[in-house]
Image 1: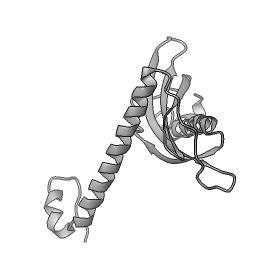
Image 2: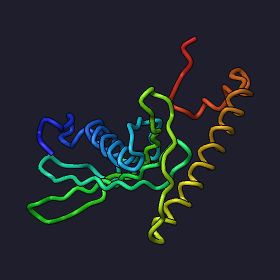
Image 3: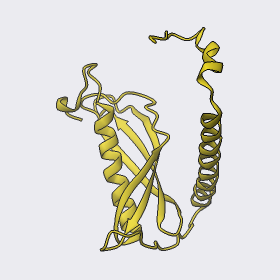
Image 4: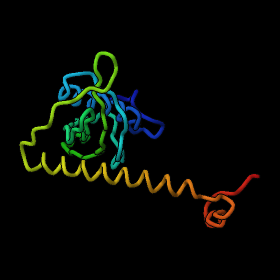
Length: 165
């Protein structure tokens, strides 16, 4: 990681890492699908530890799940300080990608061969992740649709905000 990638705090900017992760997710997805793939969503982007200028960064990708036209790619980011030899896990996140045909329409992807118990675990975790994501989306949409702002303003009393209207 070079100094030009650093943020004002002197650490590698999260946007740089996200850009690298997106490129790696594209490479993994398109290699499996055999066609162009686009990013649909990114889940679980947690910056566990900062990446320092001068560290070597490795991005490990695996296609964890495939649907009919979508793929879930897991990305693990590792940073290594070459001077000390210390290695740290800095990020793990999940990119949902969709394969596209030459006309830009979703394209069916090949099934996934699960070669190890870890492959099977990742696939099953992806199914659960998808279920939880859908459940959260439904619950949040339901809560938002019945939220009466006037009736819920008491929730703001202990928060660090104030109404300006």
